[in-house]
Length: 338
Image (tube, rainbow, N blue to C red; front, top):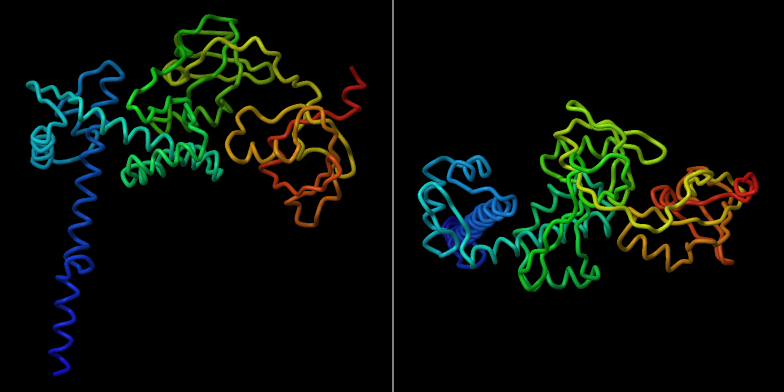
């Protein structure tokens, strides 16, 4: 009798419509199908945006599927009215483009959330966003965008499609084509392939940085940001897009240090927040009074070194090193020396 009850319980666990093993397997297969569908549509959208024609072979290289599985997938997408096959070429239908733009919007908004709200390193946000982009409904994406103030670009400078399905055109000119000695502001760092992006960030390049091309040869492009020089191979430089630098006066670099470098007991005046410091963390510091011209004092450093206390506007505030690194200050002694 006991064994019979056990067998019945096992059978129910397997076949229950909503919670059994069979239901879990159906849900897993549906998730895989949705991910393959959306990745395929995203590839076709990217190819069209770049002015290239997508094909069965380019899609195979992107998804890494066998010919048989990929043929089944493309036939299903065409039956569902998401793509149109023209010989060896594939293109999105209007409905297919709508779905692809939704996935792209979810991906780039999630990158903003990870980088600016959670503080995740930029070299990790792309892969992490790809794990979440297929799980969000249009309503969830709208709420995510609203919660972050409807950002226009992701942390790499890529434009974020709007809820109306309109994809803004990418801005900027490839650095490899920018004229010599002309100030330019970095507006986009291509995050694919990841290895190329890692090389750019290792060079210290970031969005908002103002640079000048001071040398261009067939083998290298040399940039200067006024303090450091950066040497890039032409193919790598093509992944950097720039626009004309703003006429606003840049933050003076001479005598300016990060707040984290201010000795214990010393005072300084806040010059600016690092332009690349965005999102909730930046808004929080501004709300706390970390604005240009405010005098700030570094309190005694704790034994652990982090967080550290600072006093401004009559209030003592503790900041972690990663936050105080983004606050730029100048000591009265540095100002008196000029």
